[in-house]
Image 1 (tube, rainbow, N blue to C red):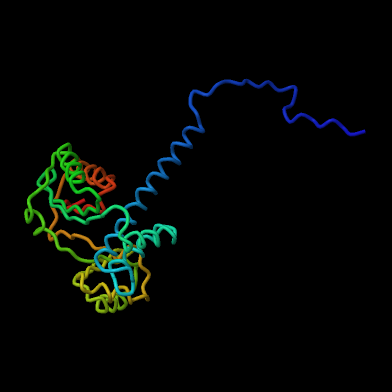
Image 2: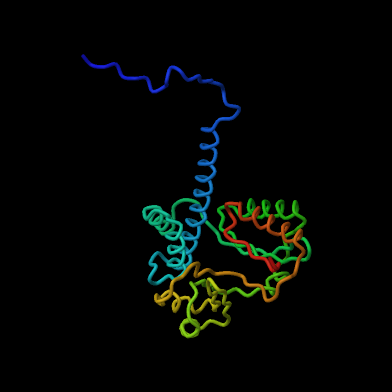
Length: 252
């Protein structure tokens, strides 16, 4: 005769069942939705970068360095291969929304300059949104040439730490005009025309980049509270789906 399975709850123990004041499942679901939303937003920005690159230089990454760079960035974010291919086909086939790239100059609080890069299917919407966000944080859009002269458009590559001889060799290979050395990493800066040399060099371990950036010629020192205000404004701008990247000459 089969023995009756013992109840996992021991009869001599007292249990109190009550309703929780909060939903653990709701918290988990909300956190997952936030992560998925961020992932979707990043993928959207990466897709737009690919579309812009194809429109400007064609669908062959071997002949289009901007596209090759956009694809590399997408891979770093683990963007699925079929999503990358779909973005390329979308641009080369001429279907879907027309994505336009833009570069805007702006002033933030405390005399800080901003360069904002966008990729949008509706320029009027994007400009209106930027004006509103900047105004809300004590800033404003600037006229063409009002801020750009404070920055140098170039390529930034961050590698793992390496011996000095290797640093100098890599700098020479990519024609770097400046190098910043830290204990954990090395940052190289080079001109846009040297992108092909960067893409061909595979002997170094790249932590970030190559990225096309606006590097400030000098930085504005700020108090800790002022720095927080600028960091908040940068974060708000980068939250916008139409905004690809934001650069500032604040010393953060």
